[in-house]
Image (cartoon, rainbow over all chains, first blue to last red):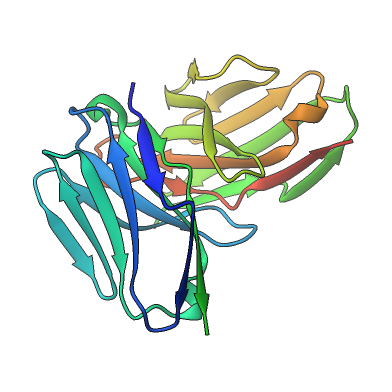
Length: 113
Length: 113
């Protein structure tokens, strides 16, 4: 089955700096990679996703890059703000499945004012 | 638009008591449905998923069971709770056509005492 590794487990940045979270996956059949943001006491929210037919996707301050050859994908947050502080999860779809995601263990991002 | 409802938000139950957590989805048909548990260590553990009424797949053998009596209703149950069942339980749905990723509910914080 799919195995998704996420690094770092914690990340602390100053407001205005950039933050990068990296994930690797094991299943070459995986073709969908979403990123979720979870604030304390709430359910995770989808913030951006990428499919294997593109290498990069951007939405305002958030971008995701995908390297299929190396089997890794990254989340980039620019001009970080205190409200970006949360736990971030990456995921990949197991075996290219329509319905089953395997999640990384999460990264606690803290943006210091 | 689609919405997902999960209740209750918090629950304190004694060891050995039964459990029933309910999740419903509105605004879509034939969704894929999921139950996840999130322990204090942040990881998201897939417990059950369902691709149709009466179709339940279990990912981890345990003290819990799931049922899908209606197309947009997913129930997580236990006959006798254990202390180790404490955690944050999340319901999620995704569309059958892979048009988007998971949408999570707001979660239930279960404490078994």
